[in-house]
Image 1: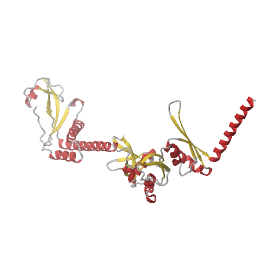
Image 2: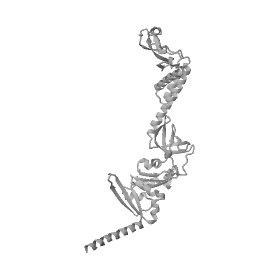
Image 3: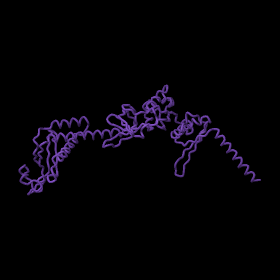
Image 4: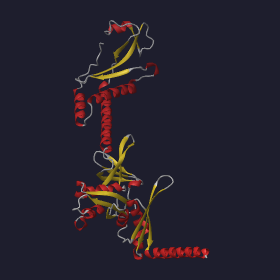
Length: 391
């Protein structure tokens, strides 16, 4: 179909800008052109829509991909008698503008003369390109960090409000929510411009843009810090079997060596304790207990209760009525080790239970001796009663 194009100079600058941005930001240039065309239509309707009687039902815009020339047009119906001038054209007028084979009822394109098309196009192009860049950047952020969930990232604290800490992690701004912040450690500060390490928890939508959610409290952060700091873990010779953490206060980590010539605990501690101290420094001096993982549950529980010394561990593994496996352990410790085994506010035994997967009941040797004596007396009493009945 013939078109009456606006008498404008080729928009080489527009085409060049689109191609340049598409290449630099890795965006499909055709999508940018389409976005500008949609923006032109929206801008035209906003500025030249007229009153309700003059509303054009179908407005479209096209940009020549080579020259940048812009064509704004409307679809009108060919009729015998024009009633709606905005959306109808007589058959005689249609033939005059070049549609020689047109018939009544056909729809044809008619160019729209826009006096201020240059300004309109510039505004539409600017808005469309900016939106496309935002969309492309958002897609990149979501794609990049969705694949980094559970990994460590470094970032710079930007600001802090009553609930959240906002962090710059390069191409994106991330957020550390209330539950992801260490709040019970006076050495943990979220000061502006401070560089810290975080665990990537996920990507969420916030104000129409993806927001990367970070954490300083997740136990996996400790695991990842050891992987960064200990070459033997990174190489796979030393394996972290389990971690129990109360963020900001204490962590217990169980390690195992696949190579009998490598000391798992020693590798993690490092020469003069430098490796574990480096991790503690990153975690605001959070205490870290490194223990050897043992296949034998009793030995593992003894290790997990360090620094307390254990006298005996009795294991009981049963299945309840719901088919769930219950793991219980009665641990006997010397009287003077009881407080150490329990820990301040029960923290040591609580972390040991989480590290091993056993419900741990700690008894003093003296209490166990008393209970054993009482049980022995009860047994003799039962025997004497039964003997008396036989007489």
